[in-house]
Image 1 (tube, rainbow, N blue to C red):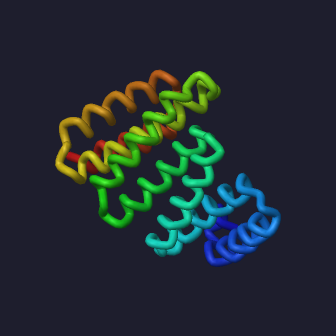
Image 2: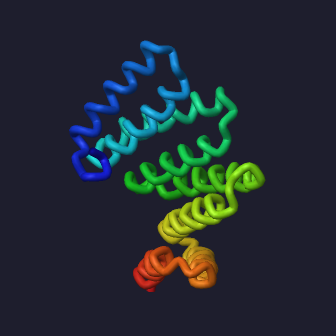
Length: 168
C-alpha cells in the first residue's frame, strides 16, 4: 500500500504488524515494522511520530548489532529531520549512517554498497547546502554525478543533476 501511495492503509497494516511482532516477542520483526511505520507516518506528514518509530527501530537494531540496518534507519531518521528543516541534525545522522556503511562495506554486496552510499551522499549534500556548505555540497554532487555516469546509472545521474541544477 505504501508503494501505491495509499499511506493511511499502509499505516493500518504496519500498526497491526507491529502488534503481532510485539505479541510474538520478535524484535527483528518489530524493528522492521517500526521502520515501515515510520515511513508511512512520514509520508502522511506526521514527522514527529515517524521520528519516534525510526528511533525505536534503531534501538532494536543496535541491540541486535545489525549495523547495516542501523545505517538504513539513521538515513531514514535523517530524511525525517530534513523534512522538518533540521538539516544540521540530519547531516550528523547522514554522517553516522555513512560511517556504519563504510565500516560494513566488506559484508555488503558491492553494488548494494555503491548504491546506498551514493544515495546517502546525495541526500547529505542537500543538508550540506541547507546549512551553508554549498561548495562542499556541489563538490559532493559533482563527484556522485561522475560516478553515476561511469557506472551507466542514467536514472541516478539525472536525479543528481536535478539537485545540482537547483543549487545554481
